[in-house]
Length: 193
Image: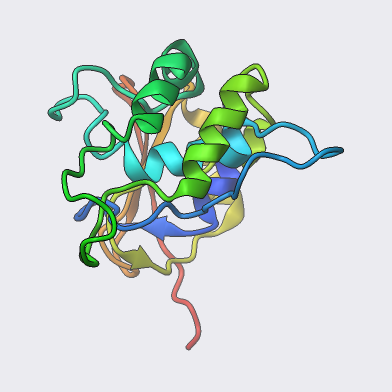
C-alpha cells in the first residue's frame, strides 16, 4: 500500500500530460558537500537532476536503452552515470562550451556534475522517500481536490507507482496504479481566484 508521504511531493505542483519537462533541472543542488555536511542523497539531490535531464529519454518507449526513473535504476548504474557525465558524453550536447550561448542547452551545469560525483563517492544513499520529486510531463496546472477523496483514491491503488492524470482544472482527474486494471476518478473543486 502506498502511503500519503510518498505522494505528497506529487501534489506540490501538478502537471497535465501533454509536454515533457525541458530546460535546467528543477533543482541544481550545488557542488559536493563541504566538511561537516552530509553526502548528497538520491531523493534530495540526484533525482531532480536525473528527472530534469535524463528521464525524458531514459524511460520506457523512448530512445535510451534503459530507464532511469527510480532509485534502483540509477543506483544500479551509478558509477557508469558518473563516468558519462564527467566525460560530458551524457546528456548528449555536441557544441563545445565557450563558443556562444545556446537556448535549451542540454549540458549539465558543473554543480550537477559535482553533485553526482559526490553522491557516488558517498555511497549512493537513497535519502528520505518523502523528498523524492514525482516524475511529470506537461505544463503547470493548478487544480483542487477534496483531500479525503484524494487520499481514498491513493490508498485504493495496490502498486508502488501511482499515476495522476490531469487534463484541465475543471475536468476530472484519474488515479491509477502502474499495471492496475482499477482506475479511481476524482472530481476537481473550483479554486477561488
